[in-house]
Amino acid sequence: MPIFQQLLLMESIEVGPQQYPHIYALGEDCAHRLGIGVPQIFIQRGSESDAYTFATDDIAPIIVLSSEIVESFTPEELKFVIGHECGHIHNLHGVYNTVIEIMTNQLAEGVLQSVPTQGVLDLFVQGGLTIFFKRWSRYAEITCDRAGLICCGDVRTAELAFVKLIIGSGDSLKQIRRCIIEG
Image 1 (tube, rainbow, N blue to C red):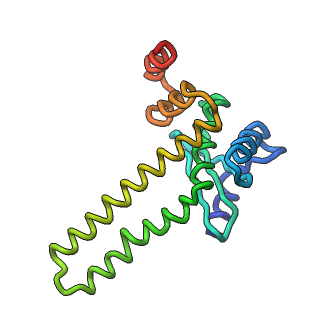
Image 2 (cartoon, rainbow, N blue to C red):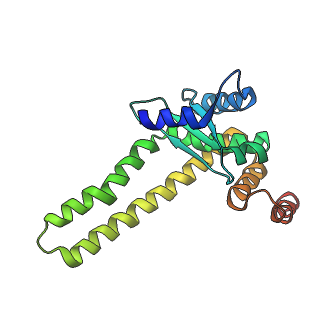
């Protein structure tokens, strides 16, 4: 994590009261609503709508937003995204995702290699773990979508943010936006 944090400091811009104060205020509001400390927020150059969170016991939680999100999302939509990422922090998903990564990759593989009847058992256990953890991951995302909704406070805004995350903010968004607003 320290290496990752150093890379962020070199390749990104840290949000704060002096730098991107409006985004910092969104992060503060979301953190307050969800009862967590204010995470560090970084903006990283990127042409895709992307956001992610790093959180462990060793370092303060970090949210990374792509420059595409910062440039093309309204403040309310950005609040949904930041709220979603704060949901991961609130629910300690960073820790669980690390465990999942270890379980489904190295640990499971090591355990299965030590079992003499590896063939079918290998496929069964590996497949079962993968299905279980992918299902857990989907539930975690839904939980964080709820946190994003708590932060932005508007279902239509959340819907538009979802659409922008999936297809971007180009011409195809105009058709979908009309359906969401009118629907």
